[in-house]
Each structure stands twice: as structure tokens, then as C-alpha cells.
Length: 245
Length: 312
Ligand SMILES: [Fe+2]
Ligand SMILES: [Fe+2]
Image 1 (cartoon, rainbow over the protein chains, first blue to last red):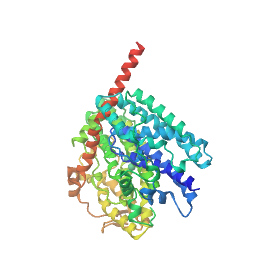
Image 2: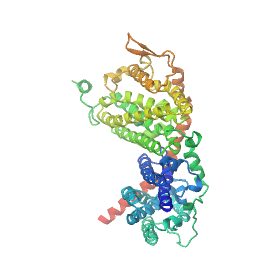
Image 3: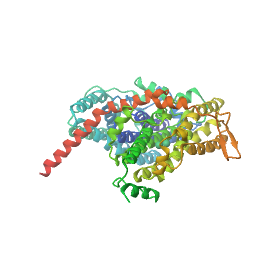
């Protein structure tokens, strides 16, 4: 039971923190249409997070709710991978982070169709349509920036440099991922294949697979960024406890 | 009938003016000014509320707020497109905003200090916007009228959500009630100013009414708004910050106190509490996005060139 709860929270935390980061763009995007697109992705991800949290809350019982799980857990209890909590920085880093994460989510949600848990299967199946679009949108931007101007190329290459070290963690199973019927080798191979093909089109190099990776997010050992995200996100719930909003 | 008489006849007969139709140059200019100002207001209006997206107190509220701010971006988009049919580009309009030549609604130059402000904006600011905008669904210029039909549907949704947010606070803890009343106190007078100066200080009204760009005067709409809100505030168990607010049986309207027009003109003139931050935020987003737009253009050109070579 604990494994299932932790796994569900892992799925929820990833979607929430990624969605939260995307929502920071709202009103500040480089193109009005893209401001709308990235807010849309934020909405999709927060919607997915809510489905997972609601399910986790029923498993936990004890009056847990989607909001108690999102707003009253501290850094060490969050299980999202390090990738999603990284700052947006510029548009290049934002779209690349989205591309790495959405591609991972895409194959993961596909794999979840083999899971024994009907609820997780159903949430993932529904989300897969959204994620398919996120992969397409972010791939197109990676290609556009890689094969756009000298400046955009410089920025996307720098983004690869910044983010690549956080991708290895995606494929290192935490203990709660071991009984999920996820084929991590399949996951990693497919992810790599997609990254390679889009990077080729974007005319950018894929870093060596053997390069050093950061990890720890899945078991609560986060980067310093998550503390600030939670401080901001949880402010009202912490300052005015036991209130209805 | 000459062109101008023919045009006025169409307006009088409630036939929509379309972009390719002949129109007086002043009509075109008035519309460009009004529609672009309206579009800018939608875009700048994303900022005070966007401010609270990362701090929304529940996942449901967070989703509602993102969707709302995103709707406003969509409104901006429809309106920029409507203005473009009059022969001005979106980039030109942005430039007018950034240089201060074009205005946007002054209400967005006030700060959002607490979560209750998000409710107050939905209820009062979107509420005032709706009253301004419903008549615009019948405005004489076709693309503007059609854009407004889509906008109005969403705005009434925003107002209900804002009211529901405040209702939750008004039934909550003492701290939440206080937060609710405080937000109403701060947003009430600025929202009355959203209808623009009094009719005797609004020189363009007569011409705009004749062209059916406008259908009600500023004071008529303001009164309608006050009558509506004065009733709704009772449901919240809150008050409006006006000692002179009182039902007038003879007029069948609420009487209300004096609006501080000095403050209004100061904010219009750039001296509101957040004028500089709002404009800076828009200018920065535009400047920081320049390399992204250039990359998108360069890529599209390369792709087109490739297709042309392949076809040859
Ligand atoms: Fe709007
Ligand atoms: Fe609105």
C-alpha cells in the first residue's frame, strides 16, 4: 500500500511542480499565442496532478485531500524529480525542460497501461492525449530554436548543458517504482531515441550518455529550488491554517 | 447620397460596417484607438492577477485562475485581430503601448495585495467590464461586435467565479472576512472610474453614440453597475465604502458619493501605484522575447526555402 501511495504521489508531484513552473510564464511569454500555449500546458499538468492527488488521498484516508497533500507537505516529502523544479530561466531552457519531461511522461503513461492498478491506468490513459500534444509543441520549439538563428542556437545548446544532468534520474527507479511493471530499459531507450531524432532535426548534439547525473528528488533530496517553490505556493495555507478557500 | 450619408444610413439601419466598406477616417481612427486600448487592457490586465497564480491557496483555485488569466490573453488576441482589419498591425499597436501613446484601463495600475483581491477583481472589475462590453456586442463595426460576443460569454463566467471566491471568504474565519472587506474597500472606487469621466467631461461620447460605437453614456452604465453591486454586496454580508450610498425611491436608483476624479486623472497620467511596474513588465516580456520571435521567423523562412527548392 505504501508503495502505491508513494508512487501516486511521485506522479502527482512531478505534474504539479512542472505545471507550477509553467504557470510562472503566464502574462510574460515572448509571443501572445505562446503565452496561451504554455498556460494551457500548465493547466493540463495541474489537472493531472489533481487526479493523482485525489486518488492518493483516498488511499491514505485520514481526511487527506488533494490540497493537504499539495500544500501541507514539506520539501523532504515531495517526490518529484529534480528536472521539473529547475528554474525556467529563458524560453530555451523552458521548452527544453518541457521536451525532456513530456517525452518521459509520454512513454511512462504508455507503460502505465500495463499497471495492475485500474485508477492509475485510467488517469494515465486520459492524460496521454494531453501529453502527446505537449511533446509535439515542445519538440517543435526545440527544432525551431536549434535551427533558427545563431543566438537561439547558442541558447538551446546552453540549455542542454544546464539540464542534461537532471535527465538520468528519470530512469533510476526509486524503491516505490520497483513493483510498477514499468520497463525502465524500454522507457530509457525510447526516450533516448526520441531525443536523438529531435536533436538531429534541431542540428544540436546529444551529450554523452555516460556523463554525470544528479539524482535524489524522487526520495526527497531536492535542489534548493523546491523550497522556494513551496514557500510561495503554500504561503496562504501555512499563514491561515484550517481555512476554507 | 454621398459616401458619408450612405455610411450613416447603414449605421442607422443597424447594418454592420465591415472592414472593406467605406468609412469616415475619423470612424476608423476612433475604432483603432478604442479597440487597441481594449486589447491592451486585456493583456496588461493579466499582470495583477497573474501575480497570484503561484500563490493560489488550493489546486482548484489555481486552475481557475490560470484559466481566467489565459482567457484574458485570448480576449487580447481577438481584439488585436479585430483592430488589424482596420489597417494597423499588432506590432504597431504594441509599440504604441510601450511608448505610452496608447492607453489601457487604469484599473490595472492598482496592486493586488491579498488573495481577496482576486475575488474583488473578478466581481467588480470583470463586472464593470461586462456592463461596458455587452452593448459593444451590437457595436456598428462588425469584427469588433463579433469579438465582443465571445469575450462577454467568458467575462460573465469570471464575474461569477470572483463573487464565489469572495463568498467563500465571507463565510470563513475572521481573518478571511477582514481580507474580503478590505479588498472591496480598495477596489470599489477604482472600479467606478472604469466607466470613464462624467458625461459632461466626455467630449467624444456624442459622436461615438451617433456612429453607434457606443450605445450608453458613461454615467448611465456606471449607475447600472452601482445598482447591481449595491444589491450583490448584501449577499456577501459586506459593505461598500461609501457613506452616501442610499436607495433613492424617486429615481429608482442608488445615490452615491463623489468620485475622486483627481485620482483618476493622476492614474491615467501615469502616476498610479503600479503604472511603471505594469508597463515595465510588458516591455520586458517584449524585449526578452525578441530573440525567440526572430528565431521563429528565421526557421519558418528556412523551411519555406527548403520546400521551394524541393518543389523546383
Ligand atoms: Fe477580458
Ligand atoms: Fe475577464
